[in-house]
Length: 211
Image 1 (cartoon, rainbow, N blue to C red):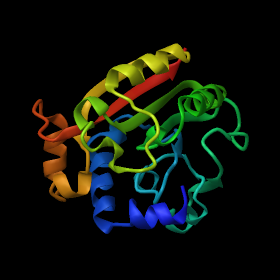
Image 2: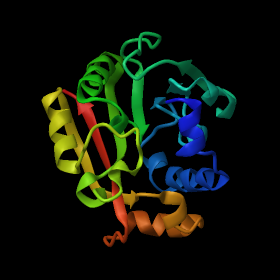
Image 3: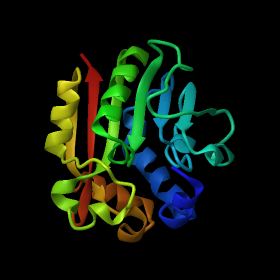
Image 4: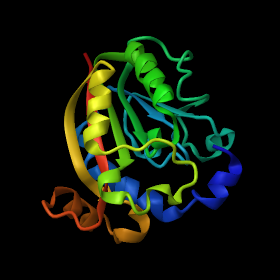
């Protein structure tokens, strides 16, 4: 993505960090071990990886300016999603991408999945957070860089077709626009995550491991 995109569609907002701190506290810290190596694909401003507590943390993005937003002790790679050549094989325990694969073609996504397979450890997994087209069709293409359409069904099928076993599907994980829709109060975010009722829930979460 270009710098212009970040100015127009993805400007830096301090509230986002508060939201991701809550997501780490109430969800991700229960799934990521302190001994893990964690890879954030298309990390943007580093809102996810900056809150992760793990032995090794790696942030990757094609946008060169992302490195100025990454916290100390985190490795940075300026590279495309399909270029994971700088990573050692079999070392990634937890790969993560938030609002990324709708910006690439299905061929590029398949290439990423193939590359990532060689980088994941024996217990490695991939977790994706995405707009769910089934619930966000009206707003999906408000972002002019969206290319591919995904629902929780099609994304799960695509992962399976590309050699992954889907182990978790949450069709309505979060509202589409986290900052404006969820009050920036961590306990409320925690309650939203565990509630069976998901008002405005238009982002999905899927986790998978390589077969």
